[in-house]
Image (cartoon, rainbow, N blue to C red; front, side, top):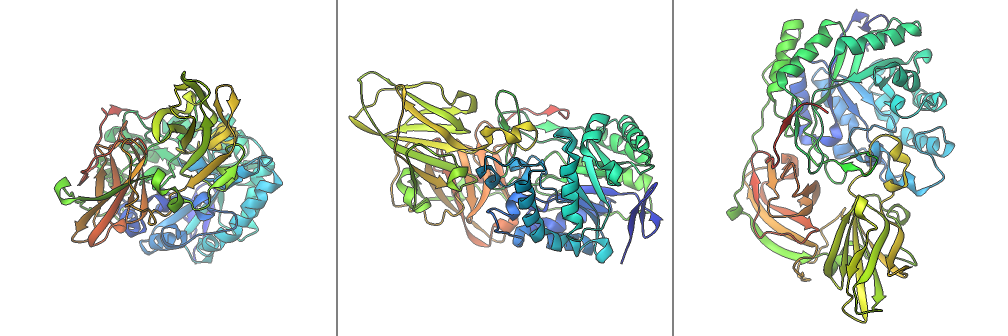
Length: 601
């Protein structure tokens, strides 16, 4: 049994303790690689791992919980403990993290009268149910129970969102009433406005700061806030940003390794504690990428969460890792350090990967959703009980004139593709949805299809409450000046693609599934080169690896060895643009198809 206290410094078993932590999100790293990442954290000389907990993965549908396999936070914490790492857990209902809807489950959006992330009793009731399922695994692993969890977070950067202390206290009370008795903390921007709004400092909840440089300046602000409230607490940066995330169609962002090492050295020489965000970024598998909120339109983030971190997306050490280990060896010569673990990815040339079959989406709708939703007007995704993926809306429209008709998708998100009788007519993305689509209807009665993709919900800010976070078509579709009625909607969550009928046919230029096979001598890391395809998602042995898009900046998808197997492996690409290739290859390293630039946003 250990003790952890916060006084004028952190005390572990009564002795002064400097937290040298790095963020590793268990849900962004395949469990077969947890040991690899955690060992490399320990080998760099750090002593603590920090992780968020994503509510939306653990409770995908109301009252249905999953803490198994890749979602076993208990196993992740135990692996850290076996390596001698302490842990900071951040189980707040909102995590930001460039993660879909900031980690909150999309089914919260079904109730338009509920206000998420507030004192609303309906929201707190949902959090309470979630905590009933989550907290036993965390409580049993606190240092007060013989485990390695030394601290937990109440809420995340709440000072950048609101100032409702009653809400913060409600979340704290939900934690403590379920057995959380280690010290609690909040993390916010280090200036007074954020700290005043987002902390519970008067309730003795440790206030920490988030920043990525200028430690002296930021710690001075944090210390002044502590002193203003009569506290003489240790200074900690809960998120020291060592890189940044990337968005579709933008350049990859990099931070100079020496600049990072110098900035970390400055913080440590000031006597502060640190948690690197990220130590290992990992991957936004499936449909879990987040989205940056903007005034005109949202900017969706890519599948890779490499983050230019000390470990790359695969989990191997970068130049930053070596320079940071040098800093630790210099400032903390008594800390254990070692050489890192390094994996090797494999490449498979196109001539060794066979295209087995290709079939169309339109030909497989019943295989993917055998019970389409029928309604007078199109319904948004959440109202149909769906959280992620695509929706295919279908109706029949009459031709009223030989001239091009005016078609409009009214109030839809995020990306809409319009087809008439199976022929692609237009594609509109966010800010262009609702603009006129002019098309001459060829038949007296025509089939109108609209394929809408949910590209990821925003992960921070006031737009969490915007109606744009409800995906699909929210109002309707107009032809000429009137709304069209009588719709069918196929919910394409793509949770299971095993029922696809590859003998059903395909029309060129329409959405399709391409099935490839490749053979490995043993399970191995690799990268899918999606060159030759347009936009869609990839599946390896049935697992959704994530989204690809030809606009870049990254033209590959990382596949961890835990998703592959010895012998024959299946690779399926769901392609929405009709841009396909009969060949594909696997690479041993990622492919960047945009110029890189220096600096952190």
